[in-house]
Length: 297
Image 1 (cartoon, rainbow, N blue to C red):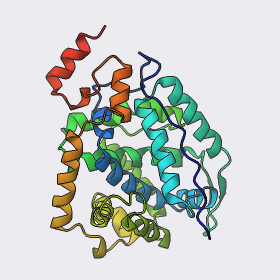
Image 2: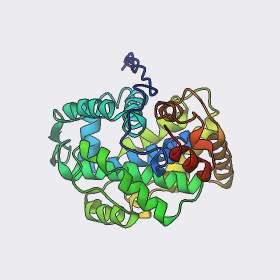
Image 3: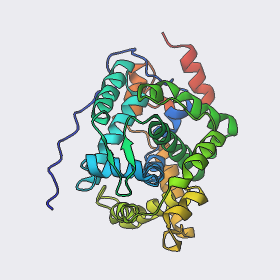
C-alpha cells in the first residue's frame, strides 16, 4: 500500500492573542516537562504501548485512523493537539479538543476477539489520559531530571482541566492512582504484532531522518524500559528491547542538552511571550521565574 500524502499541520502562532491564558500556568510542572522533546518522544512511545495493550484501544486506533498507513503523521497530529492543550490559549485548546472529540464520536466497532468498543467509552478515555501523563512524567523523571513526589503529584493534578475537555471522568492524581487503574484493566491486556510493528517504525528513524538512527533505537528501548513490568510482560517485549548502558548515557546526554536549548520559535517560548514573559523564561532559575511572574504588568 502506498503511503498517503500527509496534509500539512496548520501553523499555529502561540504568541497570540497577547495575554490569553493557557489551561496550565507558566510555572507549572507540565510546562517544564513538555518543553523537553526527548522526554516527549520517550513518553509518547510508552503511552502508545500502554494504550495498545488494551485490544479495544488498539482496534479503535488501527481500524479508524490512518495509523496503520501513516503512523508518523498520526503521531504528529496527536502531538500537535497535546502542545496546544498545554501551551495554547484556552479558546484554541477548546477548539482543537472539540475537533478531536468529534472524530472520536464516530469511532466504534468490535475487536478481532469480539469485544465491542467505542472511543467515547469513559473507561478508555480515562486510560488514554492516564497513559499520557504517566509516559511523559516518567520519561522526564528518568532521563532528564528527577522530580520530587510533590512535583509528580502536582503534574498529575495540573492536567485535570484539559483532561475534562476530552471527557475524562476519573483523572489520576498520583502514580498510585495510575497503577490502580492499570491493575483494574490488566486482565484485558494482551500481546499483538502491532506493538512490535510500531516499535520497528520508531527504531527505523523515519519520524526524524536527520537524527542518528542509533538514537531512535535507544528511544524505543527507553520507552519499553519505563513500562511497568506487568505491562511489558503482557506485551511480551523481551530482552531484545533492553536498554543498554550506552543507550542510557546517550539519551541522558541529549535529553539534558535539550533541557538547556532555548528555541525562540518553539511553542513553549512563544507561549511565554504571549503571557508577557521572556521567551527563555522556562530556562531560568526558579527564583528568577517567580520574580518575573510577580512583576508582570
